[in-house]
Length: 116
Image (cartoon, rainbow, N blue to C red; front, side, top):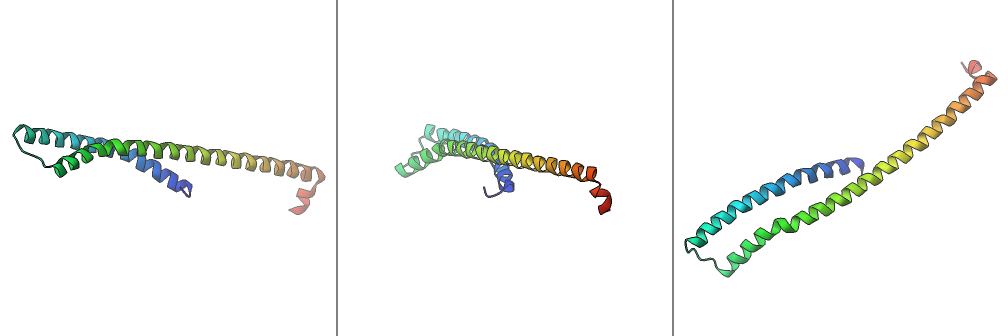
């Protein structure tokens, strides 16, 4: 992801994709029941149809690891971005503290009253 917004969008997509995979598995289970019915009633499948059925049923098992891998990579990227943000915040806080010290020093010298 190129920016923080893309990280958030990808997290939302991966969260939604978990539901899609469950839905696909449910649909495949319904397909398995239908195929079992056809086979039990002597409906013959040719080799291409059997290959296609096998590939279709194996597809969710192939997709799930990829989705999990993307999720891990996305979490690592999010952690990196959060660490970077914490570091930037820390540097900004230090810079503000320095400005406060400088303002107090000017105030002791009376420079602030003269600038108003």
